[in-house]
Amino acid sequence: MARTSTASGSPGRPRSSVDAAVFAATRATMDELGYARATVDRIAAAAGIAKTTIYRRWPTKGALITAFLIDAFDAPPMEDFEGREALPALIRWVAAKIAEPGVGAAFAGVFTDAVNDPGLRELLSTRLQEPHLLTLQELLGRPRRRVLFVVDVVVGTLLHRMGMTGEPMAEEDVDDLVAMVRRVLD
Amino acid sequence: MARTSTASGSPGRPRSSVDAAVFAATRATMDELGYARATVDRIAAAAGIAKTTIYRRWPTKGALITAFLIDAFDAPPMEDFEGREALPALIRWVAAKIAEPGVGAAFAGVFTDAVNDPGLRELLSTRLQEPHLLTLQELLGRPRRRVLFVVDVVVGTLLHRMGMTGEPMAEEDVDDLVAMVRRVLD
DNA sequence: GCAATTTCGCTACTTGAGGTATCGATACTG
DNA sequence: CAGTATCGATACCTCAAGTAGCGAAATTGC
Figure (cartoon, each protein chain N blue to C red):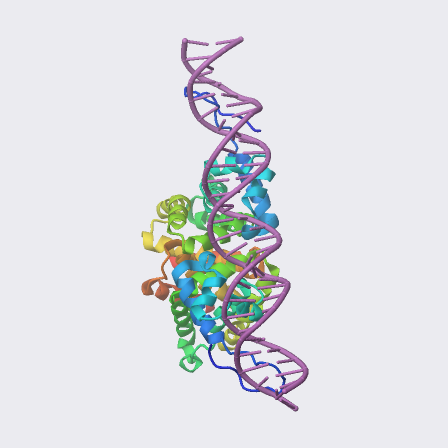
């Protein structure tokens, strides 16, 4: 098993830090099998840990995949995002992330579960979307409604292409997406 | 059971025409429980038929839901769609359809399954999207690539809003969507 | 070193849903 | 009435989400 966290004063065996291994295994299994067929058993096996260990950290499969996505979309390279070229760079970054093996499938899957699972929807909206929403709002200096709309357009378009074709959007079309959104914000 | 189809020369008990009842039951069950929890058993029960009868007509749950969607999105009122106002009217029609109870959930669900199910993706792309694609291409007089992009934007945006908020997009935002797409095609 | 404590892996289990098989009953054709 | 194809009902198989229980680690504090 991977590292084990440092002492924290409390007694008992410390939790081993398996997050990185689990996320990597999630990514690989998602890519190989997709959301529906990627079982928690297989993810656990790929990560080299027991299924029960996963359920001790994330209550449901949806929560696990959401955590994976939060991790995957964490920390966009903001240093590259200055001035007028910030938005295009950010859109291209999101497009590239969704194009990464496993990420698009995970996103689409957890997304669907969210439509009729208020708890998951809350998680997805609060933990995954909200931080980026705040960043964007500050970056663009636009009202929240406008920023929400832009996020729907960008992520929705990329995911729809992914679902319909099975492959990420071509660069050429991402260029069009950038141009379109740019005009919306003018 | 509903009507039974007219004689077709072949012997044996004719198939009863249950499609309308099944689609209505699918809509209601999707609305009530969402894609994941809407079981084929329940849909059959709601339609007043046996589960086996459903599986005699549609090979999988995904195929059933796709058929439901094809039926739901069939025959947009093209007589209303003439001249410059054709596209806005069509977008609003799609938005209203996705906003109908059960339709958005069904769409998002089958959509996710499609990401890693080539067969379902083929079905969805060929039977659901393609006809509308052809109509749009003729209506807009634009190259296929452009029309595909527009469809990704419109449907993707509407579905993303649905997934994130659990509710259909407000009319105000649909207006923005119309305006944005209009500019893309200019 | 040793007790107390907490997590680990493992195995077994429960529950539920997709999908299949079978069979008697039913509704047709000729 | 004979033949045929579908119907509903029931039972079943398989697989995956999630839970329970237990002995084996890995710690802290004495």
